[in-house]
Image 1 (cartoon, rainbow over the protein chains, first blue to last red):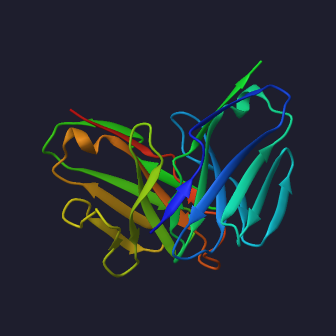
Image 2: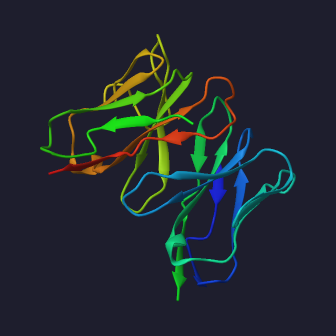
Length: 109
Length: 116
């Protein structure tokens, strides 16, 4: 079966660092994506990992361990505008994405 | 990156009627997908829109309820048929570049559907 797990919600403080974890079990694996979604808007792409290791892009980094079926998204220097839902998604075959339930991040002052 | 225009952006429909959602891309793409996002939920893939052939549906979704067209490499439609309040969701079109299936998927702005 296909299963992608991430925490339902997290709270962090402005200026801090937060790590959102994602574990997955899928029938195939062609890469793992992280998306950000603000309420009422479409998801926007944050990162893509297909090889093990850390990908850094500004304040956002994403890590992948294929052997462990594990990824995390790291957000540094949190800003209020980072309050959003963060979606972990696995591409298994043919470009299709299987999404986790999303993590609702609240950034407090 | 691909620019995706999806319309309508929102609609309120009577139960029993049908709504067709359009997705236009500014460049030719091999893969086009339709997702549904129910209130408070994450995205669920409805089907893959195949150019020149029938769409490929995921478990739990059928062609009679969600007919899809893909007449060319830049355009697709999704129809939500015989609507009920349970169909109230956001419907999203997504594309992946034709040259590499494993790069980022781009999303349209979504269609927020309310069935009354």
